[in-house]
Length: 173
Image (cartoon, rainbow, N blue to C red; front, side, top):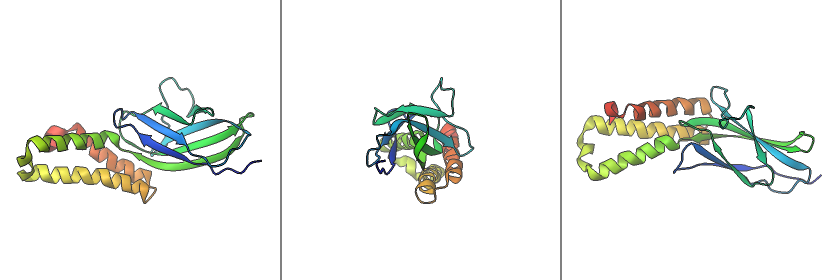
C-alpha cells in the first residue's frame, strides 16, 4: 500500500458566503482510495449539509480535486472531517480540522468601512466607535479561537455576538 499524508484546505467565498470550498491537498497517491466523505459539524454537534442531502456527510467524488458546499446561512465555527475510502466503503484515512467560517460578518465589516469612507466624521461618535471596535474584536477573536485555540465553541459564541450586532445594526451602527 502506498504511503499518503492526508490533507485539505478550506476557504469561504467572499462573493457567496454560503459556499465553502474544500480542496484535497493530500500528498502521495493511494491506489486503493476511490471516494471521499466530508462531515461538517457545528459547535453544537449538528451537521451542515446541502439541501436534499439525507446523510450527515457529503459524498465527494475522488475524481474532483475540490468540492464547493452550499451549506451556510450564517457564520459557523466547525470541525470538518474528510474521510478517504476504498471501493468497499472502508475508511483508509481520516483527517479533522477546525475552521472559523466568518465571511458574513467580515463582509458586513467591509460595508461599515465603506460607510466610514463616505462619512468619515462618524468615528467621532463615541458609541459608534466603541461598537465598531467591539464588533471587530468579536470577529478577530472568533478566528483566533480556532487558529490558536482549536476552540469552536468559544469561536461560535463570538460569531453569535458579532452576528447579533450585524442583525441589529440600527442599534449599534
